[in-house]
Image (cartoon, rainbow, N blue to C red; front, top):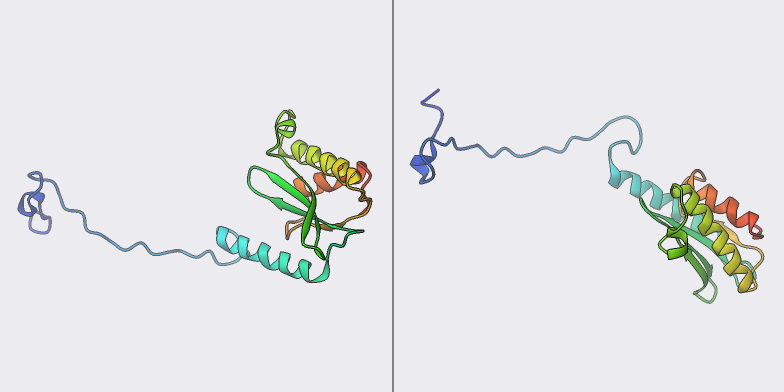
Length: 155
């Protein structure tokens, strides 16, 4: 053992400290369930779902696209007229009145849905095309959509 272990004193460091060998770290890939354990793979799958959805839907001035972006902490929504390339209204959970809401992220998403419905009414919009952004219609996305419907928006 003494023969195999080099000491740092020979390398000019502290006396008697062993030198660690540098091994290359090998990436381990999870095989089986799609997207499990691979955040980049999940992101890629969500992006491809979003691309498929975006081929079929388009916002117009009379019926803009209600685009949802969900992050780990916040949720953002915009009313977009794709023909003119403009945003008619927007709401986000970053805003102060949404941050004041007590509750979990689902409750804040519902508040964002109420806000976007109010702002859409102020902009003269009654009907929208819902773009869930490749996210599953569940949890925060569903809470936002239900609150927007309750606020008077037609999907």
